[in-house]
Amino acid sequence: FPIFYADGAAAASLSSSAAAINNNNSTESQRRIVPPILGQSSNTGIQNNSAARLAAAFRKARKLPPLNKMVAEEFQGDNLSNYIANFCRWAANTPVPHRFDEDLGAPDSNKCLGSETKIQYIGKHLKDLRLNIVPKHPDFDGLKDVDRDHPTWWTDLRTRYADEADRFKAKNPGDEVFGHPDVIPLYRDLRHRRGGKDV
Image (cartoon, rainbow, N blue to C red; front, side, top):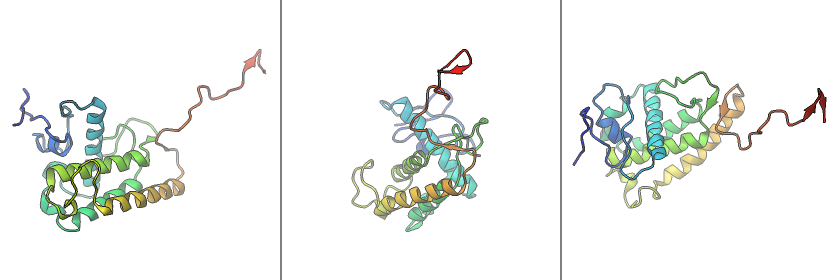
């Protein structure tokens, strides 16, 4: 049974993205963070909310109904794989700033999400669709473990997504910094200066 808080919103039960958004009383697709699942780390809850925001931004950019208006009929047949493929293409070719909102606005910063983070968020959205919107979709037939078993087309899409994201970064060398650099020097200039002279 759902748990209700003082503000009338129901707590998330299985997944904190679409389930949370479907229980949200606002007209926006996502306006507040819903508490994570009992036993779930706060970081996982934050990632689930970020994944939902990225999905909301994609749906808004493509003029699709908001997340809280998704219905199973939207994903019948090949529409599920086509939807996720379009989401991957959009994410691979769209710089998404850190701390973004569904309009892809963020504080003044040139730091963007890395391609691996975005594909993980898309995977969370696919998992959310599987758990809450289309659990009986034929693409999920015979798949038992929600975290480990995926449709065959998802594995192929991940590879093609990575290639597309790499091409986008190579063709658009701007001021954006994608992901986190592997090594960040403690000091920008590693030379030691004594009395104005290099030592």
